[in-house]
Image (cartoon, rainbow, N blue to C red; front, side, top):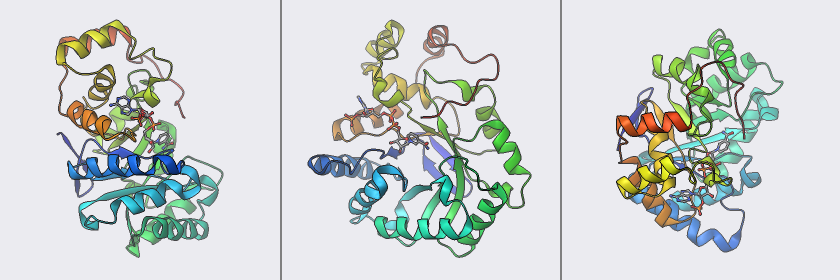
Length: 281
Ligand SMILES: NC(=O)c1ccc[n+]([C@@H]2O[C@H](COP(=O)([O-])OP(=O)(O)OC[C@H]3O[C@@H](n4cnc5c(N)ncnc54)[C@H](OP(=O)(O)O)[C@@H]3O)[C@@H](O)[C@H]2O)c1
């Protein structure tokens, strides 16, 4: 599997998302089984947030990672914009750590930009980093203009990653955000890499996607994931509560689409030719 570099950490390009996990007690066994399948097969990166189920996702992740060595994992969580002041983010972090059953996060992200000035947020994050409570910090749902502003702030150059929506049906970041990050070796954490299971079906139902899937003996969902992972410095975090889908996602991360297949997909879902507003879910 391809790897990406996040500051001093070398990580597999495929991680595990956990939005909506932990919400339904009847799904708990399957959810933990899916996460364990991923952990047992080298998926060390887990993405969660205080927002997900009001902490239920973090609690589920905490239960899932308990049997594993903490230092082998790379745990990401996020704080809400209203908790982005130094004092509130400390409270948020301590609550997240408690739910996760750990004493540090590998990466702590501002979930999206709110009203708190970025300088105050960066100062708070740098303090938590100095204390060893977080190893790295980053942002999410940041557009190019936000990233440029962040770079101007004291400590802003310590940004470790940005997490944005990125999939075959949402390619806007390719115009500016992604090349800017790649140039600076800053990972783009691609959320909803298979378009939230492609609920509208316009991606998995596409004939070219289906032909490519058949040629590789993959499913259309796997093609979407392989496509998202085709670029360097992209870390995709699909969510699944089904261990067989986890297995399929790992196989997809080990699959490479040919140049002509990528060209055919470009015809169907063109790359952006001008700036597009950042898409957010
Ligand atoms: N930073 C942010 O603002 C933000 C926003 C959205 C999401 N995220 C993060 O990104 C993660 C992923 O995004 P997402 O959950 O929105 O969408 P996603 O990963 O694109 O899609 C998840 C859906 O795809 C299905 N699925 C996964 N693998 C599959 C496979 N191999 N075959 C068929 N179906 C498959 C899952 O169902 P099954 O369970 O049945 O497999 C689930 O319904 C989230 O969980 C969260 O951690 C971050």
